[in-house]
Image (cartoon, rainbow, N blue to C red; front, top):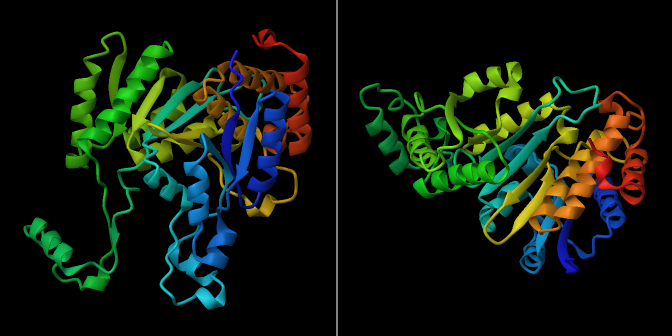
Length: 383
């Protein structure tokens, strides 16, 4: 039996994240999970007061822990963020960058894993039996963070040269053009696709579907497609298919049970994840993991929902499913299975649920029901 004592970076963040983090610790306690939870400062208050939503002291915490859990953070556009800096920091050149994007880059958390499972008994499911997993490349693509405004002249010259036949940009001034780049590497494409196939093989999944747009995004999408086709040949027992991103938004709504594992670049994976989450009940059921070779950060997919902060209203299940993924990553799979079984059974009983589940119980009441199941029933009760 694994009796290791863990050190977990604990990042409550903003808004409802603070109350959800407390409920997360309550569930872990019910599981007898032994860990030292080391608080880390992160989020909007630290941006406003320090000009950095991810202070260096928090990075140091992560470097000295086994993994991290982040409950929820607030993120706003650059111009809005600048206006919320305290007066003494305004005009000093501080620029807001999302802390989760910083964490993904600094710790090379290359894989974003988002399971989407429809739990029996949740009246907000669009269809039962949905059980798909999305592998999203987490550090490249359109979210790689390489952007320009105003446009540097060398980049402007290259842009005009590339589009010379169409004469699209040569009439614009440098401050008339903003540019975000979609950067994809061969190694990054290989990594995310191989992980999708390995997961499928190890978990008896029957198919992997690549979702991109190579007919339009010819170079970046083409590179991903080329690598996916090559890797798929190493897994002959797993069906491989390709679907364009726009078509997948339709097919996923129409026939979600036809898909097992989806793999996509950063932005497309982000969009697919939210769409799939709504099919199984909404973001209150959307856990996620940011996984690297040596470190991982786990977080519910929803934001900080400031309008609900302090109201004890938000569905905590996304937090608990993220913690289930953390337990699995730490090789505490028995505890992870107990947690997911408790969630499934409480939902199936339809006695406790938050507003998004068609009921009116509080976050605390739903958490207590799940903890009660963990403490008083065996995992075998789940059907």
